[in-house]
Every structure is written in structure tokens, then in C-alpha cells.
Length: 143
Image (cartoon, rainbow, N blue to C red; front, side):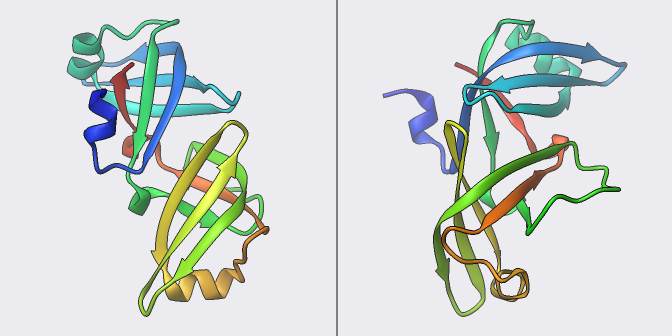
């Protein structure tokens, strides 16, 4: 059993670091997911050093399901770096919240959004969506 199986974070995406850019306090980490999509994480410089992140490092990108927003189509004019297209494979709508399962190329994401948002977007199993994730909401663990 690995550490990843002990986390409550639903979205644990395997990938490989392609680049690390460091600043005074923070670092941006570009990750190529196993399915071929690119993801960016913004983490503290201290964490990047402690994890020993360099190009070629195998990692898990971790994203809480509550931090995955959805769009019914491509969007422009956003500061959100991570825009992952996918298809809804599961949809559970409760009284207040909805849980949405999305298949990406080679990975699956879970998004938890309000029932109202799911209704407004007209979501259904089989519909195409774009998962939107701020780089600051992506955590990184070494694989």
C-alpha cells in the first residue's frame, strides 16, 4: 500500500516533471500527465527543494475534488492555467451538491460543484466539459 492510497484527495494523477521554474518564494512545476496532458503546479520553493523536483522526476499531482471547476466548453480570458478537456462518465446530483466523474486521456478526475452549477451547465453523462484547476490548488508528491 502506497501513501497515495491513504489520502482523502480523490484526484491523484501520475505524471513526470518536465520543468521547474523557481522564484524567491514559489516555484512552478510543469507536469506531463501519463495521458499526455500538461498540468502546472505552483508550490513553495522550500517544498520543491525538499521533494528534489527536477525534469524527469516521477510525481503524483494531487487536487481536491472541490478545487476542480467545470466549464461546458472552451473558455478564454482566464488566469487559470490548467484546462483539461474530458467527458462526464458519472454524475450524482444531491440536494445541494453534485459529484461529477470526468474521464481524461489516461486519467479520471472528480469534481464536486453545487447542484445549481450542474443544472445551469446542463451536465449529463456523456457531455464534454473542461476541468479548470488553478495552479496554486495542485499539490505535488513524489511517486
